[in-house]
Length: 222
Image (cartoon, rainbow, N blue to C red; front, top):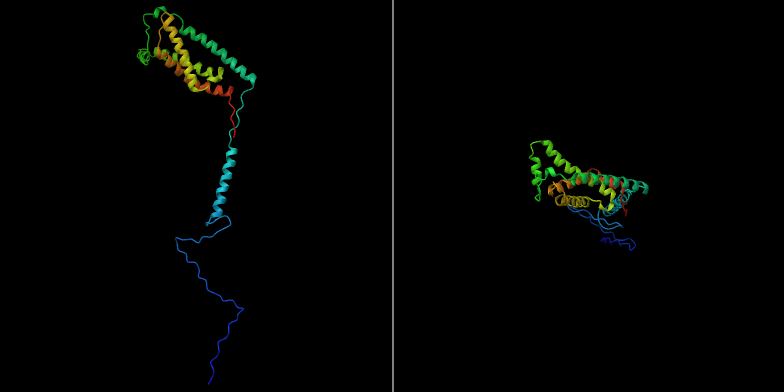
């Protein structure tokens, strides 16, 4: 009888190999790979992107700093303030002649007005448009120099509210003087409102720009 072949002995030096199954991925799942910078499929890219954006943002912020405003030299500033002061004095003289000059002929026609809008309605109800324009426009023009000159003469009064408050106080004093001491004149609150409106117009058109040019503020850069 023939003997059955004996099984061949396995070599002890040859390693045993095992089959590894490939990872199964679906449409909703993605293989996660890790890098030195952190987990995530795009971890390095995101960190680099955000870092780059931060650096660009910081560099852009430093580069977009506002330039420092330099005020005028001291001689030019003094000259501008002196000219504005002279114009202010001249305006005060004209204002005194227009508002504090007695008018006995119109004593029977004047009356005190404490209700805003009453005198303004009477101005607009006049048959001649020229008379209405003279009354309304004249009171507005009287306040324009305050808005133009006050911020230049007195730097501490810079600002819309400060200019309007100062104009209202001065015009109230003028109206009180008219009603108490001047013949043919009376206190009128509408005149104060129109004068203050003129100061607002003058400040917005010229006063703000002139005050910034003469008394420029230094911008602090951080």
